[in-house]
Image (tube, rainbow, N blue to C red; front, side, top):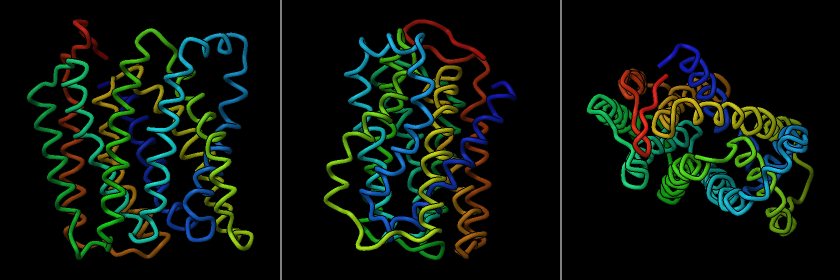
Length: 294
């Protein structure tokens, strides 16, 4: 994989890894539903100036149904599930459980898209998954069963959405597809948010956290996500989920004083080895009979 995509993959991992920390900070004051809606509304402000340009506006008509589906499966459901899970889990555990996205994506892409996966990629994904199991240790962090299940379901939604994006955008513009899905989800969540308004205005820390989630983790992050799927495909892009435990643990330690143990360090090393192997298929991958390379 070209170095520029490694850099983008790592940067995206850092941005998305930070999201769990800010979710943990903001959710208790906003509530899961209002926080997600605020996050999506802010992200919409980044996408709208781009998508309302003449060269993009006419591309919405043929794909609005796909964008509407992604609004639910890639934004509304998983964002809300992870925000809810933060009420009963450390932020680093949210990041750890989210990394199951990569393995699920590989399986869905293989079954749905007939996308070939090399032995090296498969081995890398398995190694990365082993690293996740090392990280999921009672000594590392705490999480209730409900919070853990919420994260796993949310991660499964991300996996489905990633493969759906690659399949449905074969002849469409991914920026338009994903951008409008963000805007649609922001609008759809407004009625639900009105039912869960907080008793008082959130603090400055919570407001800053919500702003970061919307502008950086979602807005800028999704722009990088679009670029990666377009250039390296769904399976490789999904390996960004393996970076999330690493960055989630780092940010949680620095800003939330969450504990880093020896098993966490070992797990992170194994995860990084898995990511390297999973993205080292120099022969490329096959999608609908076409060989795609860097």
